[in-house]
Each structure stands twice: as C-alpha cells, then as structure tokens.
Amino acid sequence: MKQDYFSDQAAEYARFRPTYPKELYASIFSYVRFFDAVWDCGTGNGQVALELAKHFKVVKATDISAAQIQRANRLPNIEYICCPAEKSPFPAKSFDLITVATALHWFDLPSYWREVSRVGKKGAILAVWFYSLIRITPEIDKIADNFCYNLMKKFWPPERQHVNRNYDDIVFPFQKVQDLTLENKFKWSRDHFLGYLESWSSVQQYMKRMHANPLNLIKKDLFDLWPETKSYEVNFPVILKIFKI
Image (cartoon, rainbow, N blue to C red; front, top):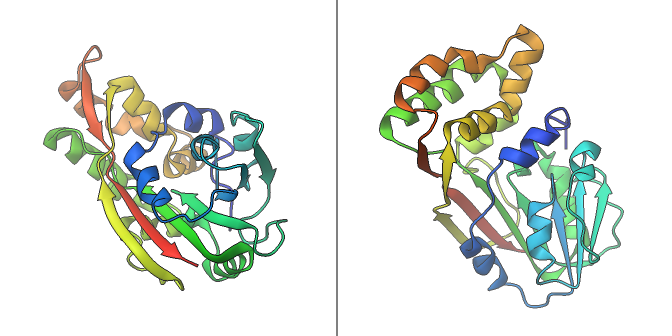
C-alpha cells in the first residue's frame, strides 16, 4: 500500500462501515477447491477475516494500519500481521484463496500482482470486491453524489478513481472466472449515515487541511430530507471480481 489513509479514523471505520452479503462469500467459495489457508489482504478491522475463519483452517489477515488491526476481533485461527500488501512474510505457494475487500485500489498493483503469484497455490483463487456509492432515495442520493464527486473531489487520493471506474481501468494478470454486482441493504439512521461519511479518507483530509468538518456543507439539505428519528433502507451495491491464479 502506498499510504495509510485510515489509522486516524480507525474507530469510526470499525463502527460505521457496512458488512458484506452472505451471497458474496458463497460465490467466492464455489470456486475454492481447498480450505486450508486464506490470506485476507488489507483486512482493516478484520470483518472479512472473521467470516473466512468460519470456513478455513488458517486465516492470515494483513494491513498496513496497526491502529485498524488493534481493533480487529480475534479468533484462534486468525493471525493478524501489520505489513504492506506488496511484501508479505508468507512462504511461496501458501494460500488456497486470497481476498481483498475495498482495498485493492490503494495497492501498488505491479508489486502486488507479483506477491499474489508468489504466495498463491497453483489454481488458487483471488477475489477482490468493493462497494460503490451508497443509494438511499433519489433526493438523498443527489446530496451524496454531490458531496462525493464535487465537494470532496480535491480531497480524494488519486487511487480513488479506480473505484469510480468500477475497477474497469485495472488490468488483472489472472484468468477471470466471475464478475457480478450484489445488493447489500441495511436500515440506517441519519446519524449512522453521517458517521459513515465521516470515515471517508477524503473527509479526513479535508478536516486536516481546512480545519473544518465538510459535513456541515450538506447538513441543512440532508436534515430537510431526513428527520433524526427516521431510518431509511440503504443499499451498498457490491462489485465482485474473481480470478484464478
């Protein structure tokens, strides 16, 4: 990973980021031949590692952010390691599955591809996914879109463009076996939505550089549409890409 954008807001990230649907894991596991060892790269607070631990004998979960790893939930078959995605401590041909959840765009990709080729077993699976921008109602979506693409435009790291382009601009040097989009729905309060926005790396950069909270730019319009006591169904479309190494 080129830079750690998430240690400063590790608590907010753990509290407000959405989980992933069961259908996602079922799709991935349908291509996995053996369930001995898996590497969850860019594990963050370990939410994916916890799910993988239900199915694999050994889970290695890595992240460049020590603050994120310190907040991860522990299980006996999960080992958390603070290290770059591009240079892991693992022996060659170690893993049946390698996963990257909403983190691939932060990696130095040529170096990461070499590491995946080195530590993946022959015929192992690489599964990468990310959620695209939240969808709530047409009116609230306009506020979220404007906030993401206009108000925060100058504060996103350049790697964020990969997400905006649905990873279509990334050349994967492996055989693609699946590419699909899944719905991912939750019931959220207005405060939860604001907490999620505040966990964005662009919002954190804005606060550091401008010494103000950019959420104040949208609160009036948002509060007019979303009463404090109301919960909305929110959807995080998840885009999943599966490859054979």
